[in-house]
Image 1 (cartoon, rainbow, N blue to C red):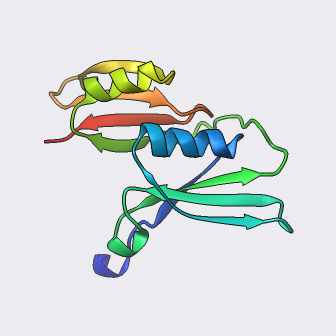
Image 2 (image 1 turned 90 degrees about the vertical axis):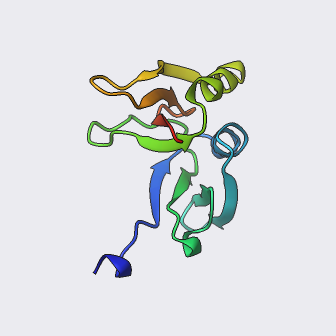
Length: 132
C-alpha cells in the first residue's frame, strides 16, 4: 500500500510572501516550483522544494493570506527537517545572511548525528541534519 501513498507537501502560513520565498530559495537553496494567486479567496500559494512532487519529493506550500502579516506559532507543529552536506557551514552562511540560529551545530543529545536549528522569518523552526 505504501507505493500508492506519499507525502506531497507541508503547508505553512507566512506573513510576508516575498521575504519567505527569498528565505527558502536564496538561503535554503530550494526552487520556486509554482505560484497561484487567488484574488477571490484573498490568498496566494507558492510551492518551493528541491524537486517537484511528481518526482516523489515532498515540498513546502507557503500560504499568504492577504492582509495577515503575523501568525502565532502553534504548539502541535514541531519543525521541518532539511538534510544538508555541512551543518556548520550552512549555519555560518545563514547567520551571515541574518537568519536566526536557535540551536548551534552539534551532535544530537545521546547520539552522533550533527544537527542545528534555524528559524524562518515567521518563526517556523527548521532542523538542519548533516547528511553523508
